[in-house]
Image 1 (cartoon, helix red, strand yellow):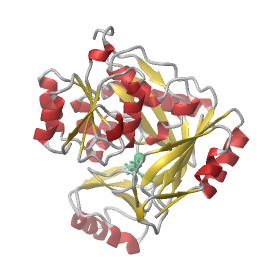
Image 2 (image 1 turned 180 degrees about the vertical axis):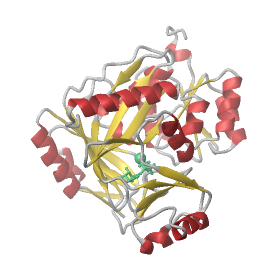
Image 3 (image 1 turned 90 degrees about the vertical axis):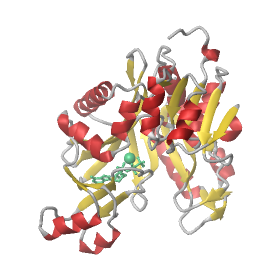
Length: 384
Ligand SMILES: Nc1ncnc2c1ncn2[C@@H]1O[C@H](COP(=O)(O)OP(=O)(O)OP(=O)(O)O)[C@@H](O)[C@H]1O
Ligand SMILES: [Mg+2]
């Protein structure tokens, strides 16, 4: 691809949520014309893009009609009508990540088979068509407690994931095509971000240690770099490269790993786009994940992933028990913290555990970073 006329490339993003917004803001530095499609004008990215089209990214015709307007089409969510992406690719639109990549990743069943075929370590699993089949398998002792059920499609932010510890939890089973996974005794959850350009340049970011809210299966905060021994890190980096290359990835890829109590490494899942576990890069890294994704899909040289500080991110989520018009409590106090950077998504309605924004911390002192994470967690609340 010619690099000279960056401005000539119309870039379409399917999805206008916070990831689309942050991509659009980064694209504005290069004055790239960004086109966004999502359901309506209320979505976070809409005020920041020159072109918005209302449409459903699960609808073939909507995606095709939108995709034909742009030169490069990318996504901020995997649950896209993939037939439309294949159609557009055939018509000459550059679709990154490629439709073949999206097809595997948007189905957790296909994703697990992809790992299995390559001997990439991942929690043992079985595929099921519905809840009834799982109950049968439990009766016949083909599966046993504890296990984790995940819907094959449409899960996000922990929705579509059910931890089934004993027979009392069986009523929580999802009645849809799903996978059942063995429950791993997780010591740490690590994410590695990589970027791969259209011509195959590949780069890794420093590993990220993620801490989850157990109630919501959702990231509470993260810190980067994670403190890992050399052997574990090189194993993870090797797996990350292998996955990116075998998926023929173009753009950014977040690889979520579990590290268990024996320090065994398991791949949980991947996401082919900027990711919640890469938000700290905005304030503590040479090149943010959003700029990197744009570089990769435009086939520009990839940017340095050097951390200039320790990076942390605290998710700002809707307080349980509150739903309605968004009210933030404690913003000023958090903003007075040295090295803290506020990012809000502009969602006017809050719901329990809805992602409303995040605060990044950049600082050279790890102890101070950890103390400030706790301070933000105990100060900031989103209520209605
Ligand atoms: N096999 C497992 N054993 C133990 N815990 C698990 C297992 N699978 C998932 N979890 C827990 O549930 C969380 C969410 O699972 P997963 O990443 O598959 O779902 P998701 O909804 O796609 O997540 P997100 O969109 O937030 O990345 C994991 O980060 C982990 O904390
Ligand atoms: Mg996940």
